[in-house]
Image (tube, rainbow, N blue to C red; front, side, top):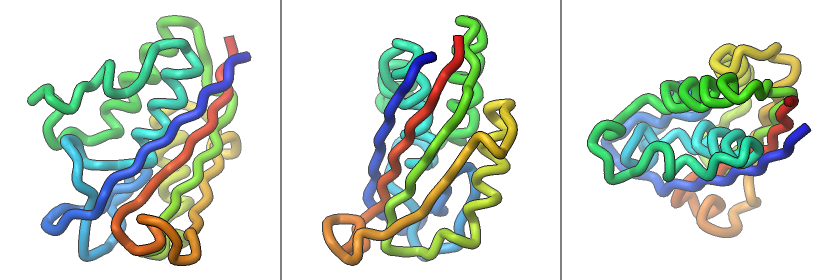
Length: 156
């Protein structure tokens, strides 16, 4: 077994959709990024790549490469999944935490879980996703952006 941890954070930006866990969440701002800014998937990719000993998301999908400008992060996740499969690594379990003061994410958690588990080719029961706030502390609490943490277990 291999364990990986991932983290990502992005600031809010106007004029962009808010995409989290592969789901477009209604909100007046999206996240600033080279890609679609999906911090949940970015943290998940980092955790998966880390557990496999393959570096991080920036190494595989650099933010200065025009090929990744505005890309759907689900495409990146599926590419990471394929790299794991080539190495005979299977995702055993995933635990994700999204940190956001706003918007309220609870109504979207199950859709995110379903999409992410589908992209990883794993049972949804082995993928957990939680949303929390920081009680108005720090950059997420002030509503400046959103952060996400991911922990994964890979089976060889």
